Length: 536
Image 1 (cartoon, rainbow, N blue to C red):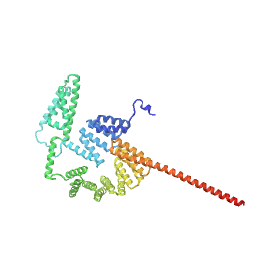
Image 2: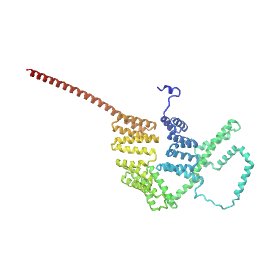
Image 3: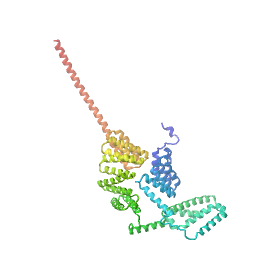
Image 4: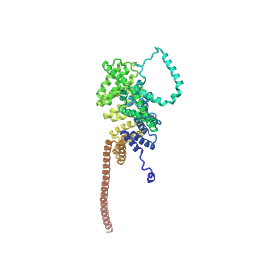
């Protein structure tokens, strides 16, 4: 049937296979091969957002910021709110050295998904890079004192130079470029360059040695020389870029400042700076599983914030709501459900009274989690259904539908569990998130088992197995295989029961037939006797 299609090209793979291959190559550090596989996958499914973002990451790993930016922008053509594409575009702009535009897109992503830490870190590093490039307002002071005639004389000299030597400069552009690069390298100490380049420093020394030993008068030597020059120029560009991100003197200065602040407490630090730094520390503590530390910091920070006026902290309400959320999460992790409900309730209340959409959405999300964790599944469903209209992306819909479906499964409302599982699967396919596709498919299969739809459950579990294999999720494969075996056993038992039931019914039918025959014989005898009596 397919012989004509395979005659010349060989068997074609599917989009999922090529994408999985590319993902695997990326993990192994084979970025060029990974790009080839992603490109093949994109030929089969053009415009796939996740694939474009993944290929952009490969380009970025190879230092190709131009193509990384092209792919990131392509992933946003149809959906400007695709947060992975927004983040990747910000990353590409950042590594291209366009820190200001990178900051814009980090902020845009943070507005779309405020709960994701990568956008907060992106804002921080972009702002630091801008400060390191142009200096912070506190460090830069301008004045007009002194003799300015020096600059006028220099300007006149530059004009005369351009008039006299303009044509000569054009003829020697390449040589001047080389001299400029040599001058740039000489301005930085070798020790600084070595610290900036790290492992690439050895490559730089090799290229410099190769450049010295290459005879540029021959055609081959000129080609080699041009390539070496290009490589050295790239390394110098990266050195300057890394120096802009975090100059050595800035690092030393910051270390001294941190020691000074530790010794002097919070003196000299503005309330806003104190709150922002504390929020970052609380967030970091919770991410690292340091629940007690995050709780203490959040409670202390909340008490401090309540003593500040609105002028000291312009966004005091948002900060207060956020701190209650952190405290609630800490209590949830510690199993203190009542306290967790109390603080998440305050977070929601502040959001509703002050029309803070993010706080409302966050509060409903966390309250639902507390109810579900404590076994109050009906309350969790009610709260999460209130959150559904506030979702901002397909991915958010995916996990929300899934969690509601899980609650219905726990309540033995299997038809509703299957319905929400199907909604979760549709949303995850729209978001092109294979992890959640796996989770949703398993939920559907579990509901089908409970509804005695064993054949449907088997099909769903087999789809889940394919997804787990593509993602190389070994633990999921083991669990799904066990579930498939159990479903197959139930199907066999069901068929066996049906067969035994059929045989039993057949035997009962035979016995009933014999009784009927006996009855008929008796009736015939009676009728015969009656007829004989009548004749007599």
